[in-house]
Amino acid sequence: MDSPPQLATILAEDHIEFRSGQPPMRTSATILVATLCLTTSAHAQSTPPATSAPQFITIGSEAILSSRLIGLNVQTADGERMGQIEDIAFEGGEIIGVVLSVGDVLGSGPRYVAVDPSTISIRYVEGDHRWQATMNANRDQLKSAPEFRYEGKWKR
Image (cartoon, rainbow, N blue to C red; front, side):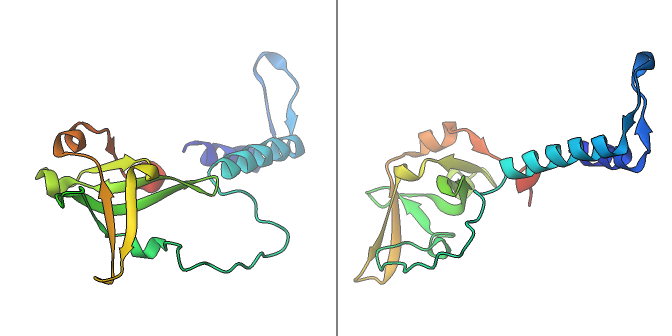
């Protein structure tokens, strides 16, 4: 996180002196290096580059929209409440995790865990007109799961 202020300082100077009498680095070389560093770090935290032309699609009726998942209660097959879907994590354009809020269930205050999306079964219950999420877990597994924290770039 300290890199951007340092880069701004470097770009504002005419040149940088290296120790031991090495030659000065010109501003244009500094700008090139800074641009490459900024481009690389920004790409590493992004989705894949957009295609040159938009690709419009039709979303089928079997698809699940993320807006219907956030806030959805997750339960066991026996109906025991395990938590609530708090967030969905994407990387490289693919879903890599589901963040569950489990603090209320465990009675521990705010606590989040991240689970692999394949461990949650989500279906639409036609008769009840609602979505249902189930997971094969128990409270002891939730207690011992690594905690997910909203820190750094995810801080709320």
